[in-house]
Image (cartoon, rainbow, N blue to C red; front, side, top):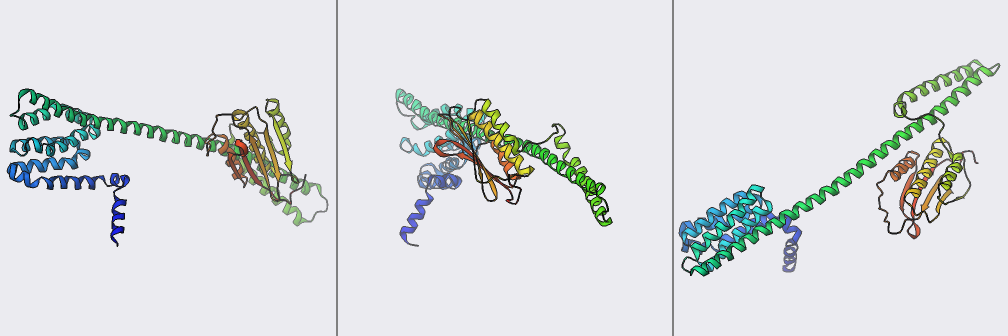
Length: 400
């Protein structure tokens, strides 16, 4: 590795995010450097007591954040040891000050309530001990000024820690609110999807029940109405009717619970779209309906999906769209699928989220997915909101 590469790696390591991520290592390195810098003066000026006190004060640079109460205790013992050893005069006060600033900052920022207030109470005690011991030979007035100066500096460190504590609490509260909002939105969307699945299950029940009833009627009619029918044909028709009756019973048993509180009845389809659009127009919604391509007569399942998607799309336009602009409803008949597009204006000053978390969009997407298609919802042309659903079908179906 070249020298330039080594410097580049070193520069990359000393980034803010990397330093925060490796904070325990950084704190241990700073504490070791701090102890090493003053080890010789502590040994020569304070003896064993000075070394022990200086070591304890250096150790607080590791404890102030992880163990604030222990750091406060170690800092108090270390300060008394250094001051009692005669290590440092006024010129070396900085070697006592920096660890104490870290201690009082740490108890306020990271300590429990009791530890936090013990730290505040300890600031005048520390200021008095430093002033009396280090500046014992100065005039009384000067000593008082020094005391208040030391006290103010220590209290400012404690206040800075309190500001960090309050800011962390505010960020945690905001994060909690955001997380709760997201979770609430997810729960609402899941409830909406579950309700839509139940509704789809109801529709599936009715479609299958209707189709099986037709099969049973046709089989029984052919079996009883035809004359001179060979026995194998009669037996086949009887098997068809029996199997269909069994399937109908199974469907009603499996899906009956999902629709026990919903009214039975025929399900809407393509023939009911005119009445649906007319109802929205009567409600004051201007709907421009266009159809392109050759229309196909859809079977029950895709027809119901189209009806529900149009119903929900126009409902969203009526509730949330700009009523001063017309809503465009487009049916684009392709070779194997029908594209249903609902486009409405957005009220001025309203922003549409990239992933709408309301009930309507997930429900329409669930409808399209269960019909074998897909749905997209986003800002359309010229700031208009657009819902596009693609519902597949077979071209071999009977054309309209």
